[in-house]
Length: 343
Image (cartoon, rainbow, N blue to C red; front, top):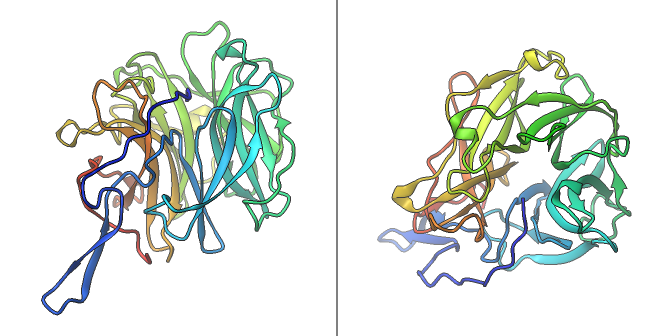
C-alpha cells in the first residue's frame, strides 16, 4: 500500500540476494542457491509476469511505474529498466501496480489519489501499445468504475474458466469500517461493470492487526481449481500476512456463498526465528521451465519496522493432496534457497 521514502540499505553478508553454487570434489556445480531479497531497493507490492522467456517486475514507487526486465526470477539487481508511466498533475500516491496478460494484451492495473486524501484513491489501467515490448510505450490511464466515487485499491483480474473476466479489489464500505474485498464482472480488460459485490470482510483476529484489512488479492489456478490469495491486517504491522479462499466447479463468482473461505489462520505469516515480518501482497509466476510456481511478495527483517523497508522476495509454492497451494515458512535473508527450476 502506502509508499514511503527510505534510506537504501546494502547487505554486506557474502551472497545475500545473489545466486551462488556449491561444488563437489570434482569442482562441478551441484545445486544453485540464492538468498532473498531479489532487489535491494524498496519494492513494496511486487508484481511479476513471465513473457517470451523474460521476467518483468513492477512495484510501488509513489509517483511513477518502472518496469524491470530480468532473464531470471531470483535476481533483478542488474535488470534492464524503463519508466513507462508518470503520475499526471493532481494525481499522487500511485500504489501496487500489477501486470496482467489478458486476451493477447498486456495491462497494468494500479491505484492513485488526488493528493488531497487517502480515501480518494481510485483504480486505473494502462495498456502496452506493443504487448511484446513491456519496456516500450503505454497508453494513457483509463479510470475503472468511474460510476463509483468510492475508495478503491489493489485491483486484480480473474480470468475465469468460463471465459469471463472479473475484477477483484479492495474498498471501503459506506460508511467505512473495514477494508473489504469486492468483485465485479468485466466487459473487457479496461471496463468494469457495476455494481460491486462484497466478497469478503475481515472479521478474524489475524485479519485485524492494526486495522481490519483484506487487500492485495491475486488469483492462483491449479488442476481446475481457482484460489484467491489475499493479504490481511495492516501493512504497517509485522503481522501482515496471507489468507486464502477459493471457488470450484466453475460456480458463479458473483455469488459470495459459492466461495469457500479458510478463515481460521494465515497461510503465510511472520517468522520471528528468521526475522521475517510484514509478509504479504503476493503475486505468483512460473519458473523458467514452467515446472514450478513461485510466490513474489514483500517483507521486512525488523519487527519494529512498521512496514517501511519492504523488499521483494520469492519462495517456491508446493501443492497439497487436494491440489491447493501449500505455502512455505517465510525464509530470512540469510537462508539459502534453491533457485527456480531452469535458472
